Length: 256
Ligand SMILES: C[S@@+](CC[C@H](N)C(=O)[O-])C[C@H]1O[C@@H](n2cnc3c(N)ncnc32)[C@H](O)[C@@H]1O
Image 1 (tube, protein in one colour):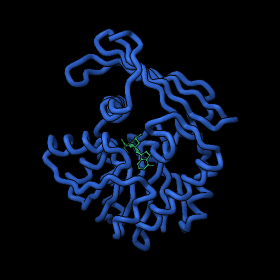
Image 2 (cartoon, rainbow, N blue to C red):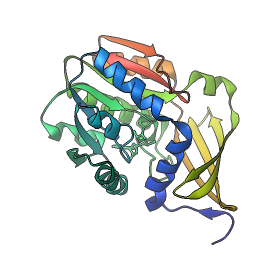
Image 3 (cartoon, rainbow, N blue to C red):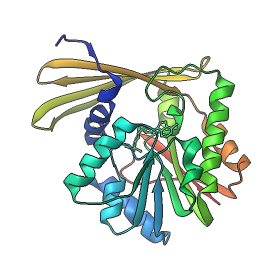
Image 4 (cartoon, rainbow, N blue to C red):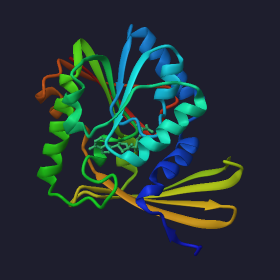
């Protein structure tokens, strides 16, 4: 293994899982669950469920949860994590454009973890034009709107305004942690290219002294664009909320 190995796409589930361990402690899921209880939520769709964070915790808390994700590799890890946690969550392999095939509605749809900006680039370099990506985001949010009960709402988050203000180059050192019995050190170098509208992340993990890099890119979505699109696709009200335990992304709640 060389010191600057590029991780393949099928490594994304493990990469994301070890990253989550740095970004969140248990209190995020606890506050989310409190928020769902407060809003009298019963049915939940996590349409970017990834490896199962935080849906496994939400399911364990007694909510009726269904999960979906567009990428099979993520879902494989999701199944393993559900098994390890002793929970059974119905899961579908669906991109956001295919969500209508669920043929049912929910009290809340979760699209968290800065997922929406990867609509065109989770497993490959962001390529389509700015207009195309914005259309895909609009189309995806529209599908999520259709899956909500009247009075239901969407939870969607994006890179924080704090991050945008600190750009265009940000270095984040998340420190060291033991993950799967190994000492891991994580840093991110984030670059904002506002001309091309690309947010590039170079993730560097040092595991027992060996460095692994992974580079990925998402769309630099402006907060006002997100709010405008949510309003355009039919949401009555959109508000930014502060959720304790969430320090990287800004959370928007859009009410149907
Ligand atoms: C950054 S991860 C976040 C995962 C999880 N929500 C979390 O908070 O840990 C982004 C997720 O969005 C999914 N995703 C990206 N584009 C998608 C699309 N067009 N349709 C469905 N899922 C998509 C990826 O497979 C990945 O699991």
